[in-house]
Length: 259
Image (cartoon, rainbow, N blue to C red; front, side):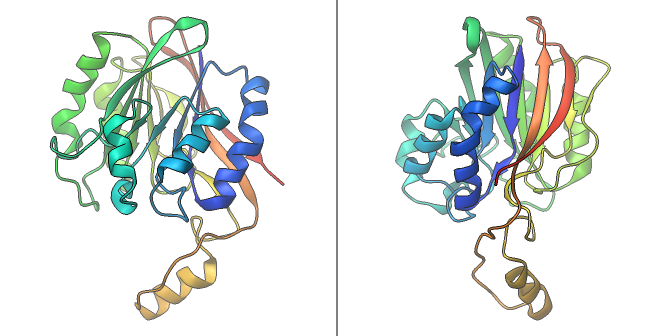
């Protein structure tokens, strides 16, 4: 099975890139399933029901979120009902939505998708290590093919989670920092891992934001409304191959320019 993970989609440029390129990219890479992180698609912060539906319509089979999940109020009732758009499982149990879903891949295979959020440098209610193994066990009761999106700031936390879950899941893919790391690998137990899958959107920027705005904020310390940049748009992510037993055999970064 070939699983494509699309890294954090930022703003209109990122969404347009997905809508324009993902259908053909799935064919070119012979993809059985596509997972996408969409927590930055609404002008760089959050997601709306309309935009979620557009990403799903473009070819994403499941959408994961992160620390900007609640930035758009209209997403709350949507997450109550959606089975294909999930938020971190280590949010409060009283929050709407779910952190684990199952989606059908090509040829009828079932894939479990788990969303977690890191604790270091992020305001996260429950530490991901408190729930990770329990929710993985829940997923393994239905399938051996499981992909985890760990939306986290700290490199150490993402690497440690991959080690913790090695041999128990197919892939542990880091998101949030928007900078693709050079450590795509398959761990000894058969789990594909990367510290950060990168960013889908404008790379002529500061992690998707207009550079002048980010620099002004850093120089002055004053609050500034960030806006997504426009130039050097590309799709980044990871392609994972695995067998029916869920063990990964390949983990490779992707980077595709979109004019």
